[in-house]
Amino acid sequence: NDILVSLNDIHYGAKVNNYWNKYDSDICRDMMRRYLDRIIEIGRLHRSENCIVWENGDAISGNIHYSIAVTNKENVIQQVIGVSELIAEFLAELSKHFASVQFVSVSGNHSRLDVKDRALQSERMDDLVEWYLAARLQNFDNVLIGVGEKVDATMYLIDVRGKTYCGIHGDYDGSATKVQALQTMARRPLYAVLSGHLHHNMMDEVQGIKTVMAGSFLGMDDFCVSKRIYGRPEQMVCICDN
Image 1 (cartoon, helix red, strand yellow):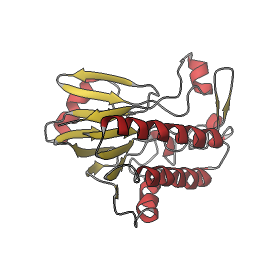
Image 2 (cartoon, rainbow, N blue to C red; image 1 turned 90 degrees about the vertical axis):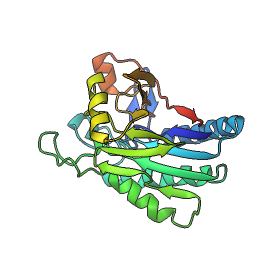
Image 3 (cartoon, rainbow, N blue to C red; image 1 turned 135 degrees about the vertical axis):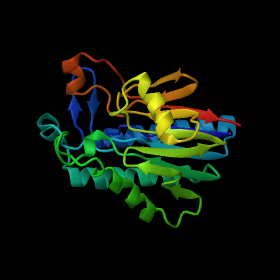
Image 4 (cartoon, one colour; image 1 turned 45 degrees about the horizontal axis):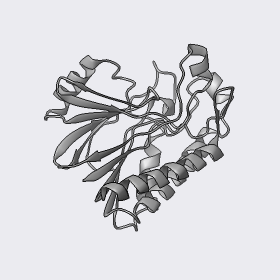
């Protein structure tokens, strides 16, 4: 079997301090270390061979809204640098425990450079993270960056144990009907769709296609409070056998 590890909606650079949650870059780093320990523990339990890490967007907090920009602990450049190095360390440590570590990603809505109606679809800061990782970890023989097939800026396809998984962020795909649309756009049978964006773990099945949605590191921010959305920081690890 292989282990499928989510690394979704890190929102690195965000600063939250409310009744329900406290989050900043230092807390994020501590959470990443604890998550790493759990992944290694689960991998040992199941004797997993390979580790596939999927980072499906919003690695940085960005500045898409004024309310986000003024509360961020770091500016966008510092966010990209900080989260890139954090993920590099994360993958480097995983490489000691698995035959191979594969990393695949897609951009999220928080890293766009302009307001939604004016932003270019393919111009998002998240893409710099994968580029940095490829250079930073080029001497790690068992770490593979950007595996699978990048269909476009919003979607990738990856093979896990002979089954095709489709990765998206989720900002364009908020209903069950979109799963069927993704099946058509992929031009091949899908086993599962991997997504994030909504900040909570969920697993379902739509017309025979599994949907796996992972949570966030961020937890409840001011937006969640204003919308009365309760949630806690969470991620998801799946064991994929033949």
